Length: 191
Image (cartoon, rainbow, N blue to C red; front, top):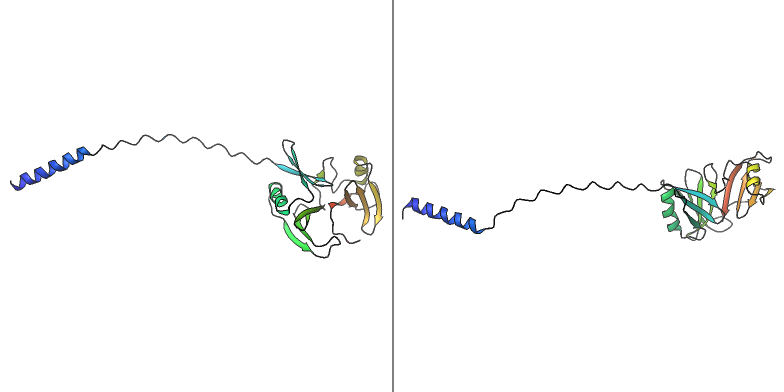
C-alpha cells in the first residue's frame, strides 16, 4: 500500500466513524421569555392610635391590632411595613414602671417595651390620630366633641386629659388649647 492509499484509508475510516455518531440536532429556538409580572406594590399601611395599642390600617380598610403585650420583635417587624426608617432604640432604667426600652421614629411616635413586650406608646408631633381624628394638634374643643367622656385637670405635668385608655397634655387651658402629647399604656412620666 502506498502512502497515498494509507492516507485515503485513514480518511475513509474517520468519515465512517463520524457517520456512526448521532447527528447533532439543531437547538430549538428559545421560547420568548414571558414578560415578568409587574411586582405588586406593597399596599400602603397607616397607623391609628388606640388605648389598647396601635391599629394598622390597610388601604382596603382592613385592620390589625398591635395590642399591648405583643412580642417586641413581632411588633417591630410589623412597624417596618408602616415606618420604613428604623426607629432609634434607647433604655431608661429609672421609670416608675421599671426599666423600659423606647423605640422612637422621626414622625413623633415612640413605642415603649417592657420585658420585650409592647407596653405603651407616646406621640408628640402631628400626623398620627385615633380613628375619629384626634391627635397632636387637635383642640380641646375637638377632643371634647369627639370624646364627651374626657376628663381634664391640672397636674404637675400641665393641663392633662384622660379619655378611655388614653391620656395626654394640652399646651394651654382654653377651648383652643391644642393637644401637645398623647399616650396610652405604660408611660415614663415623672409627676
